[in-house]
Image 1 (cartoon, rainbow, N blue to C red):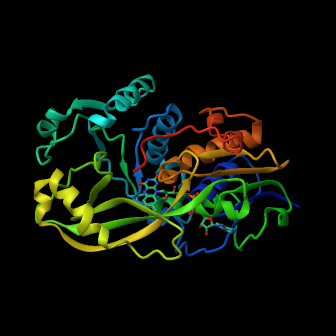
Image 2: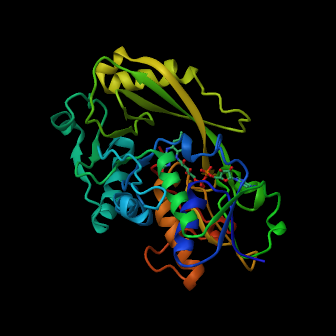
Image 3: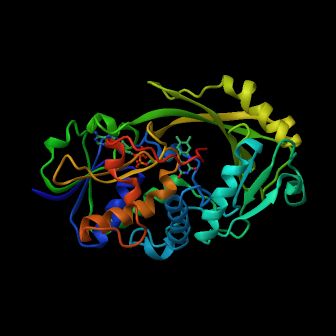
Length: 367
Ligand SMILES: Cc1cc2nc3c(=O)[nH]c(=O)nc-3n(C[C@H](O)[C@H](O)[C@H](O)COP(=O)(O)OP(=O)(O)OC[C@H]3O[C@@H](n4cnc5c(N)ncnc54)[C@H](O)[C@@H]3O)c2cc1C
């Protein structure tokens, strides 16, 4: 019998393997595709933020930043003595129209209580700080400018976690787990991302295809934050000398990961050009699509012990924020498994019972 078996070696499974191995547990990670061709994490935008509505998501975002800054110290190994995740700390800027403003003002109370370090301005003031933005239709905006939000390279982040977990004794093996019942281990963790429902039929997490476009523009704004325009749902950030822009349209039941190219002309480009007039001159240079691990009940994480089993835990349903939540979730699950309760951030609100009892706890800021 194994000590701990984790199903899924993506970012959540690997972060959890690291934290559990650090506590001396003997961890085996089973991954069906070690090239990670369709896993969510390598196809993500790499963003880490603390601008959420719910306290726990804000706190997980704060811990992500703390952890990412310590990667060179925490994740260094003999083979990888200088680990990095190529962090860019340009911050986030989220802009809200009148229909979302009241909700955002409530969110700001939570930001304040969590000492999130965010700043808020009226829509009319945006151009003073971000002169390239047209503030038409924006009621209020929240941003950070103190290197506390930004983005990382997801593959390097995963690699650093994996190398360290392996140095601490974790074993990564290739295998496609067909049923949880096939595993013989003291502790089993399902970290199967958007495929969770194939293993646990009562967990409503399914693949939802999201498209990201790569564009270039003669005008370069290297200091631009990861910006979300909540009036259209379009979000974007610089990527080297180019930009990445995410479509707000998502699709269920997609067998393939072909980008939804039509969304660019019809929706994304007009939205970008309206908000940043210099983007009128954009040229599409590429794009890709990936699956969000979407929790159909309430767009929020599902973390904890499954009440239907003696020894099965799960972490899934991050709905576009699993990369940034992976350090906090890996640490939290490890605390729960090794001590019986959460010691750092109380993650009980994400418990599996809420899902089985259909108690929604909606996090409104899905980008
Ligand atoms: C376009 C896009 C943009 C995104 N942007 C961001 C962002 O800016 N910031 C952020 O934090 N998040 C972002 N995300 C979301 C983030 O990528 C996911 O929330 C995160 O990767 C979930 O991690 P995971 O480990 O649960 O799933 P995955 O990364 O998908 O890993 C799950 C792994 O489990 C394996 N697996 C599944 N079933 C089995 C089985 N039965 N047996 C063995 N192995 C199995 C899979 O092969 C896979 O490798 C984005 C996602 C997309 C698609």
